[in-house]
Image (cartoon, rainbow, N blue to C red; front, side, top):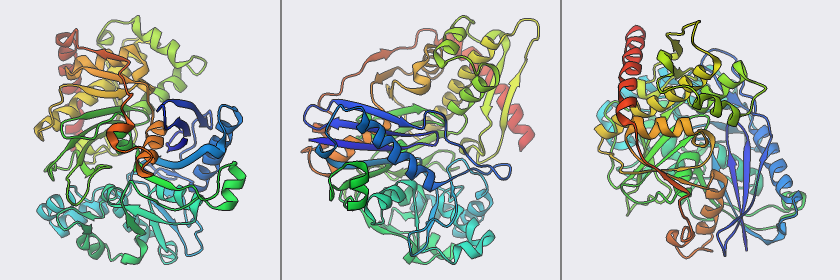
Amino acid sequence: MLLLGIDIGTSSIKVAIVDATTQETIITAQYPETESPITSLQNGWAEQSPEMWWQHVQQAILKANAAGEYNPKDIAAIGIAYQMHGLVCVDKHRNVLRDSIIWCDSRAVPFGNKAFEAIGEEKCLSHLLNSPGNFTASKLAWVKENEPHIYEQIDKVMLPGDFIAMKLTGVITTSASALSEGVFWDFKNNELSKDVMGYYDFHNSIIPTIKDVFTEHGLLSSSISEHLSLTTGIPVTYKAGDQPNNALSLNVLQPGEVAATAGTSGVIYGVGDTLSYDKQSRINSFAHVNHTATETRIGTLLCINGTGIANSFTRKLLAADKSYPLINEAAKQVPIGSEGLSVLPFGNGAERIFNNKTVGAHYQNINFNIHTEAHIFRAVQEGIAFSFRYGLDIMKENGITPSVIRAGKANLFLSDVFISAFVNATNVPVELYQVDGSVGAAKGAGIGAKIFASEKEAFANAKPLDLIEPTVHAAYDEEYKVWKELLLRQLGREA
């Protein structure tokens, strides 16, 4: 019996086929091979086409099928992970009304700030666990005010994963976890937030049917199953945002467990059992995949927009002809601290850790006589690691003090330079696993379909590849102090 996991990333779509009996990954596939475009019509805007996601999902599944490593008819359940906070709007005929306003789009910040003030800071934080900020509800408010002709046609609003499930099954559902990441969910009353819906004057009918994360979200339609060589009627049994799903894929499900990822954006994600929140909403709290009305499981999420995208920007700018392994090897030849060169990697929209300020990326102290492209490669990765340290200090203020952080061996965690900078800057060991979001989504499907008897059974065979301990923390601590001073000066200019 096989499980299909789909991961709707910003850069590409990934799929995985997992054998439910052995828990082994049979194959993974990605489409496209190059990074998907992000449309930015104005400074601070970021949009993608939901129909592009759907076309790429189909191509990724067909690519996996074409490898001939399994029988597609043996797939018994489908799970979906997706880029968080995106807004998808469809009309009553299920037609997409506009491109999705995605997670790193900053245009809705003023709308969220006004809602925070009008609803009340204490009520927002204690009921929503967040400021409405730049999240999905505020993005919808922007559409309502600026594109009323679009808003008037909306039948349902969705997160990206809800949309892909709709395309597979024809059914539209959502979950408390998805609604919480959109800041539509009232945790104290365990219901759709009357305050948010009332303040923005949204009608409840635009919200899809609310279901548990691990449950049936529709059955694969005959036309789609025929096109993809799958079995008609197999269920979609799991949908979760990419960061809760990344935590699931690393078996981070219980209070005190912590996961990290460093893809396009960077995240540290810790699980707790109380309705906790940051008073400044610099980090955010959402319903974890296993949160229920009777068992509190809150995922506290530190997000840094400018991580992997900062690294890929540097490659495009300076070394488009070099692979990431070659760049990482060049960076290893440069000493810690990049001989005085520092990088603030915040060039991808408003950063929540800075109270939704747009700081921008900055390269400091370049010396034309000594610095090479290798120095820049290293300084970028060190700057990204230092931004994690800055965010982790905020998480510690909120009671999250990890003794170890679990991460998948992917993206920046493939770089020895980044891993060393990360563990030494944070002074926290990292366990590396051979997983990715699509594999996590496949296992989520198995849990939701009750193919696995429990969450524990789904990860019974999970073993770490490596444990990396801090070895030169003092050296990185000194470099971090210099970096932080540069950052605070920049934040002062932005204040």
